[in-house]
Length: 172
Image (cartoon, rainbow, N blue to C red):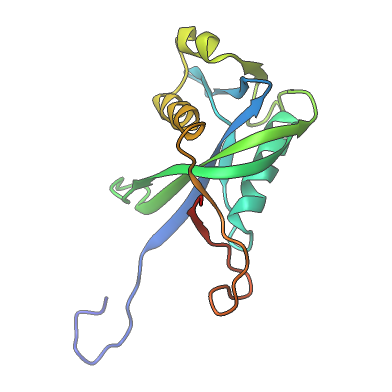
């Protein structure tokens, strides 16, 4: 915000939205392996939402790109907010986690963002030493959602929805 009273400009900061997907097929959960020059780890698939893209389209696109699996959203499980505290990247980020069902396709790595991909049981995942803690949390939320459903897409209601809006609410 400008420090003078005459200036009406307000800068709301830089923000990004990420998505994560707990994708189920026959009781098994889809994971991908990510790698950097110094380490490798397993996590749920996901990525960033493009500025002109609905979030539900983004997560389904990310799953397909990274794994070759077509999946459809069931519900929102939760989200994580990270304020822009890193001096080299002062961006506030929201990471929304969805539960999806696999529709078609077999897991395969894209060899760009993912280097291995597969469906694993909850027990197999618990025994894997390099699964990210955020992915463990997301999987726990997905397991809880089997008896306590998360947020679902609200059906269109006149006066509530505007063009381009998607609204998620409690499962009734």
